[in-house]
Image 1 (tube, helix red, strand yellow):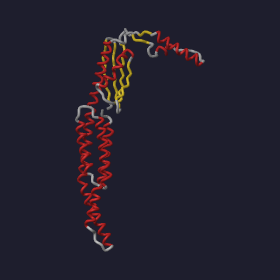
Image 2: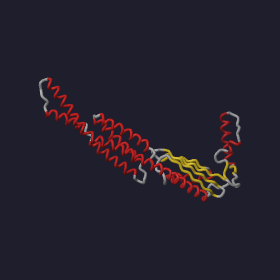
Image 3: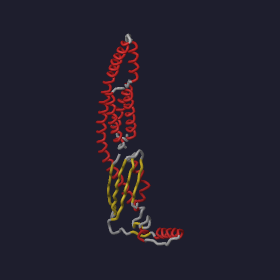
Image 4: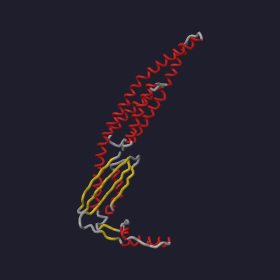
Amino acid sequence: MTGHGQAASRYGDIAIDIEIRTVNNRFLKVISKISDVASAVEPQLEGIVREYLKRGSISVSIRVSHSGQNNAATVNQSTLENYINQSKSIAERLGIEFQYDLGYLLALPGVLESARQHDDENLNEIVRETLKTALQDLQAMRHREGQAMARQFLVSLDQIQTFQEQIELRAPAVIAEYRTKLELRMRTTLASFGHQADELDLLREVLVFADRCDVSEEITRLASHLVQFRGAIDQSDSQGRRLDFLIQELFREVNTIGSKANDSQISQFVVSMKTTIEQMRELVQNVE
């Protein structure tokens, strides 16, 4: 499910701002952008996210900045010299003049280090707790959106059930109309040759047609899937995969009804049901 969460906290003269964005994904994928001073938290980040989220593409931004005076940074001379030596070696190998921009080199990873140690466990703990608060904020937003989606699902399920009931009422009439039309054609055709229609032959043809267009099993399975879908909506745990599967099964049964029914009115009901199911399919992609 798409969503957004954020949280902020302070640790002395340090400001911690965390922002989380989620988009749909069948699996859990965590992408992080973390300030160097909080880099020690990165190995634990995905584990914390998994406590709250089961799937989706998760972008986590953790910004740690100094707001006081004691925020001087020092140059890691060993790292800087390493960058320069490697750049010089590459220039010599390529036969080009070696030049460098000190300002650019100072911006490279690891060259400037915060005066505060990266292994400050107090800071790391506050970052972890702030991350959890941001995840809780995300969950609250997703919960509100989830309730709105649940209401829309229920409206769609009611629509499908209404069409299903109309198909159940229409199905017997299809067979009766077929018998009437077939009997008229048989009697008219045979009368032109001086023969009478055989009631047994008529009954046999009607039975074949009735068997071919019988959708009672599909109707039963469709009703069962609707009940299961409603039950899954009421569950408190993640039901995205289950709902996705039920959407496929709903479409399968409705598609079979359309191919077997052999009736224009039922075909119209089927088209309406497919439209509703497609709308549900798009919506269910937002469910975790």
